[in-house]
Image (tube, rainbow, N blue to C red; front, side, top):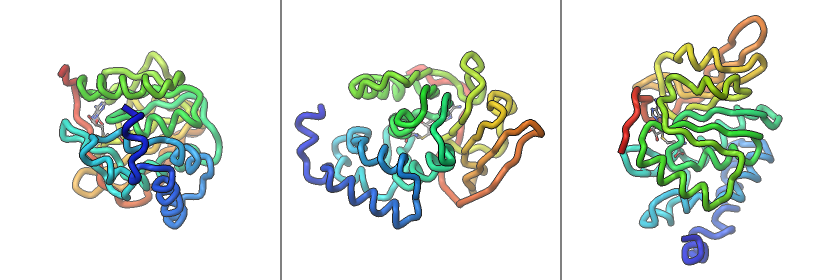
Amino acid sequence: MSIHRSGIGMTSQRTRARMISRLRDQNIQDEVVLAAMNSALRHLFVEEAIASRAYDDVALPINFGQTISSPFIVARMSELLRAGSDLGKVLEIGTGCGYQTTILAQFVDEVYSVERIGSLLSRTRSRLRESRLNNVRLKHADGLHGLPEAAPFDGIIMTCATMHLPSALLSQLAIGGRMVYPKGSQEQYLCVIERNIQGYKETILDEVKFVPILSGIVKN
Ligand code: SAH
C-alpha cells in the first residue's frame, strides 16, 4: 500500500512540513508532539480518494459515519495530555482510523485504545500492524466502561463527546494522571481533568466539534 502512495506529491514530506509550520502558527509548542506528527503518514489513515486532503486542517470522513480529527485537534489534545512529559500508560477511547493512536505511541510507553465499531477496528488493526507499533493494544469494547483490566492510567484521551463523564473513567485515572476529552453535545468544549490526592480538578478550554460517544458495541 505505502509503495505506490508514498510518492504522491500531496502526501510528501514537504506537505507534512507545511502542516507542522501551520501547527506552530496555531501555537502548538510541544516539540515531541510536532516531531510525532511530522513522522506519521497521515494520508495512509484516510481513503485514497481523499488522501490529497489528509494534511489540510480539517476533520475528514473515515466511514461508518465517523471522522478523523483535524491535525490541530490531534496536536492540541496530545499537547494537553502530555503536559510536557512522556507518559507511562494511556487509554484512548475511540480508536477510529488509529491516527491519534499512532501519535500517542511515539511518546507513551503503552497505549490502550478501545473502539466500539468492529469493522472499523479490524481495518485499523491491519493498518497499525503494517506500521509495527509494538506498544499499542487495541480492543473492541465500549469505552464507557473504560478498561478496568489495564487501569490505572496516567492519561485518558477521549475522541468522542459526552455530557457527563462515566465514573468508571474517573476511577481508572491514576493519582497524578490527566484526562482530555470533549464535553457537551451541541456546544462542546475541550476539557482537562487532573486527579490529585485531594480529588479531581476540571479546566474548560477551546470550543470543539466531535462525534458523540455511543454506548454498546457494533459487531460488524
Ligand atoms: N481518534 C479517532 C477519532 C475517531 S471519531 C481518529 O482520529 O480517527 C471517534 C470514534 O469514537 C469513532 O470511531 C467512534 O466509533 C468511537 N466511539 C464512540 N463511542 C464509543 C464508545 N462508547 N466506546 C469506544 N469507541 C467509541
